[in-house]
Image (cartoon, one colour):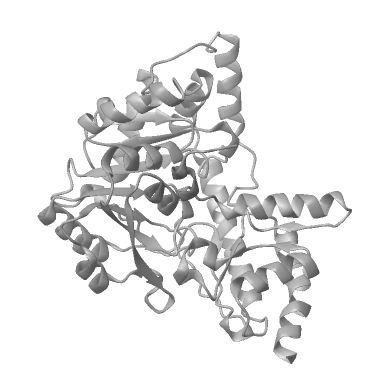
Length: 390
């Protein structure tokens, strides 16, 4: 089959490739501990499921507006206003099936051939994939362990150029769990405002912050009308399969993103959107309980990793990933990840899957039970000990 050349520029998300490989091993009778997928292992809270059932029974099974149901857009505007301390109107909100379309549609709308986009590295691989797909030029900023996986701000300032059209931020960050503090964001915002550069801020892990206070670039001076906020329901409300996300952006951009929704998805499922209202307006206790449990698991897993030979793991401040340094093994990230899956039955991701600056690291999701985390640590020890002997 002859496909368009641009398809060669479109990457993938390695987590799903590793998941498929792990499922293959399971079909042969192997037991695999899944620490590769960034998906909460909690069930969607009951009141959200009940709202969806009631919406289905009430007939919310038809097309809705491309930009989202007015009542959900109003609820999102209120929620974002309260959590970020900014004034938001519903016409700035676009609802999408999952949050990924916001990054895809934003980059597709703003970036043309040769336009540069600054992005974190290691970082969520879909950013770079979409930038390449539309003909843009990714400009990576290393996230280094010694600085808590924050932006290298001096390098960032040097790499901003007249061709820079967009800055991508992710805090708390996938895959490192790093968090950008207010001081770092202020330096980024000052340059973005002075150079008139738009910022896409991916805040999907906002609720998963274990130390310190969450800071958003959206409410900093000069960023009003210059920021696209990406967020959604998948992580905080354990709704990954529901596919419900949103963007908050200047109304002129929202019109273009809504038009891309018309051309691609028509709309987001109406009954799912009504469940989203229940998520935002209902009991938040399940969210707090999940975050508290994830913090406990983080500490358990980080402590266990640091007892393995050749492994050094920083304690991440946010998200639900750890990004241990495995350079002490003398092996590549890909080789270590492969050995852990093949020999120990533990599915993880090579840090290099998140960019060149991820080499020497692995990513584990600790959104799994305490029993699974302990089992993974026990199974991995012989593999790391075998590296130490050679």
